[in-house]
Amino acid sequence: MFDLGAVQAAVREAGLDGWLLYDFRGINILAQRVADLGGKNLSRRWFYYIPAVGEPKKLVHAIEPAALDHLPGTAKTVYRRWQDLESGVGELVIGAKRVAMEYSPRNANPYISRVDAGTVELVKSYHVEIVPSGDLIQMFEATWDDDQEQSHFEAATHCRSAYDVAFQYIADEIRAHGEVTEAAVQARIMSHFASHRMTTYSPPIVGVGPHSGDPHYETTHASNAPIRRGDWVLIDLWAKLNTPRAVYADYTRVAFVGETVPEKYTKVFSVVAAGRDAGIAKVKEAFGAGVPLMGWEVDAATREVIERAGYGDQYTHRTGHNIGQEVHGNGAHMDGLETREDRRVIRRTCFSIEPGIYLPEFGVRSEVDIYIDKNGAVHVTGGEPQTEVHTIVV
Image (cartoon, rainbow, N blue to C red; front, top):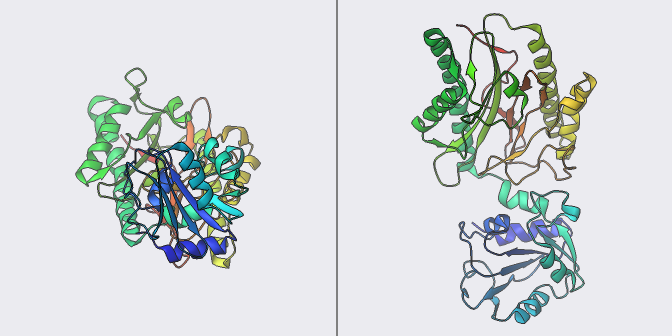
């Protein structure tokens, strides 16, 4: 539900004159959601300008003149010709100097960079400075309501139990047949999700041995490998309830098929777990003290541990991502590597902390989800973080 008062208060707090939402055929899903379009892709370009103070203004095409009628504001311009569109944009931002859009200078943060360069040029031609809307987007697209919060905790319970199911299935199949394939374990997890009314956009990662050293490994017909006694296994799974507006849970755990875990595995796992815990501690420390926290700071705290242990070059991705209706959501990421994430970590958002070390023979990742509730309490979801390599006794 669009809340004009809350949006305008946030625009004023950010020191902006307004926020200009724009979309064309779904290229800006963020604007769609803020404007409460319900996932509907309009066939023509539309603009919705929310000033810091005063009545919002709309610019829509004659084919879809009622497209934004559900939003506050009676000032509406209906255009037909492209010349009318361009002059209409000028009328929207007249008198404004600093306006937020889903834009990122030099595409530094592609998660919020949803407005095309030509549209940016058009708005700037009216002597307007365009400011990234990243923190505004977080407040009105990436934050969760009570129902979404509840859906995450339920999804987290079923994701956590999926590991018990998967590890037991591996043990049973190896006892019975001497091996089990990655694809079969994938299928067993997907069956578990279905039985708990869960959905996901893709099957989990089940990587044995060298496959676990590929952060985004995908099991195919050609790569599908057997899991046997003495093997190392990484499982990364994510899912959400199969209900409207549900949000994801996303975790990674590792296991060894055997009674005693070789030191080469425990050594690397201990470094990864220490990095993960440093990231968690950074979040708890900041919210406990009531000080602002940026996404890059969490990445730095985690990465420092792994670099100090000599594995910096083997830690090839950011520390974590925002989580929402997509598993990779649109709020602040824990990233100082791929991008410098300057957005604040805010209440009622969720994100992963998932450091990894990837070697040719095997990889280790330990992933937890962190949710900051409305009171600023920090929740590590999905059960207790993994403190030691799980043993699959066969």
